[in-house]
Image (cartoon, rainbow, N blue to C red):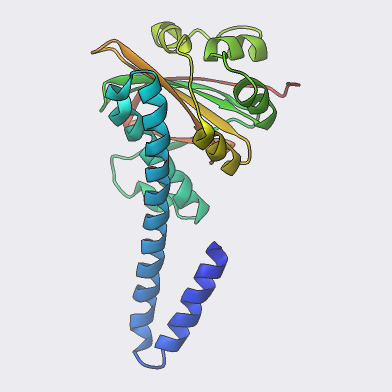
Length: 231
């Protein structure tokens, strides 16, 4: 669809070239592409918001929705820009320090979000593990899954102990979102120490096998990469 849209843009630009100076065509094409990308990003964000709202509502944790979206929105923007080969442009601000973490077989990532004041733990699962622990299970937690896959539980301190015990709740919309991500899943747990509230959301992991983080707004980063294993 993307290639088709760009082909239409090129055809339109050639036609416009007959009526306007060539120098004016390139900015118009770039502007149209920028609008397309921004619309795609906003569509994904709106879809994620609806899923997050329903899952947090079921956990009586809607107070955390702003923290969740503050984590998801940059992730959506980074993955979309990377899809278009423009990830370097996503870091145009001097204060941004984008770092990509590679989880070919899945893994666990935790950090403190300095601007939010919240802490999070992410569980990234490949297709087989998603099918086993998420789609066909109603009781798995990050603690349980890590223990089974790794044979031990990573020592992520208070953050991990707090968020790991939160049971994730997902619905048909989340399941569809995972299918759109080719069966890869991202379980995000957020804990707010100021209110002692925590919540958990499951979505598709659309930028598998990468996880892009702005190191300028993340502290206490800890992660463990899963080795190849049989689910």
